[in-house]
Structure formats: structure tokens, C-alpha cells
Image (tube, rainbow, N blue to C red):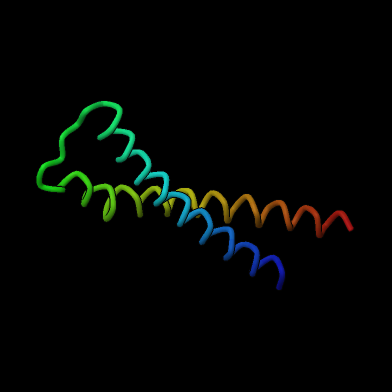
Amino acid sequence: MATVVFTILAFFAGLIGGWVLGMAAYILQTTMFGVVDRDGGLAMGYAFTIGPFLGLILGTVFAVLTARRMRREKAGR
């Protein structure tokens, strides 16, 4: 049961982390590279498309790694 709970928590941590990573990429792109986003379309793209996509990828990776590690620790006991 603990494996399932920690796997779900890892997925949500990766989901949030991926979205934050996407928004950080937007901020980096607009401030450091001088990209002008007058109408906010780029921000909307990052917030509603790129961020959630990165979150799903990172959440899935975190969940798989957590499940594998917990299964390995449980088998080693």
C-alpha cells in the first residue's frame, strides 16, 4: 500500500515540477533572450500546453522510478 501512495505522490510532485519548469523556461526566454510577448500568447502556450506536457512526462518518470525503487527495497527485506 505504501508503494502505491508514494508512487502517486511522486507523480504529483513531478506534475507540479514539470509545470514550474515550463514556466521557468518562459520567464528565462522572455527576460534573458529579449523575446517580446505583447499579447500573452506565448505565456498561454507555456501555461496551458508546454507546462502540463512537461508535467506529465516528469510525473510519469518520477512515478516509475519511485515504484521501481520501492519494489526493489521491499524485495531486499
